Image (tube, rainbow, N blue to C red):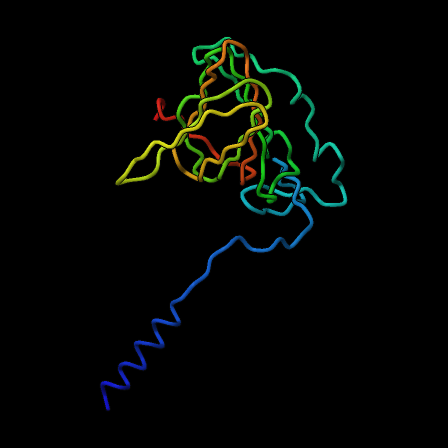
Length: 187
């Protein structure tokens, strides 16, 4: 009898410990990030502008059509469009980057600790890949051509290399307004 009560109690505790986790639903339409906390609300690590004071420029970025300067040691340049450049992205869970590659340029191995990335080649051809986590540490690679897309799972080390003799361009969407980046060579 005591053992059946114990079994019921342990079963209840096991079922009660089941938890689902996800980002909460937004409680406002948007939260334009501002640095000055005067008369603002603090949400997701940033202060929010009064929604009545929001303007189109809070959701706008000009210049992603301009090639980045690739005359550097690795031959690539990443131009971000995240919450720093577009304050209206705050709490929306998305950002964008433009990546320009010189001939044989490299976007060195790096990781985004807070975002999955999907990359689309707009011009040229890229050799891309990522490394799976321990214990396998498998290298998964693919050659991409104009119009091709490739996904880099959240937190995994990945890279892109321009295999062509001409410049290449890609755009990537990331599943965070602030995906973070850790360049492996700098770690």
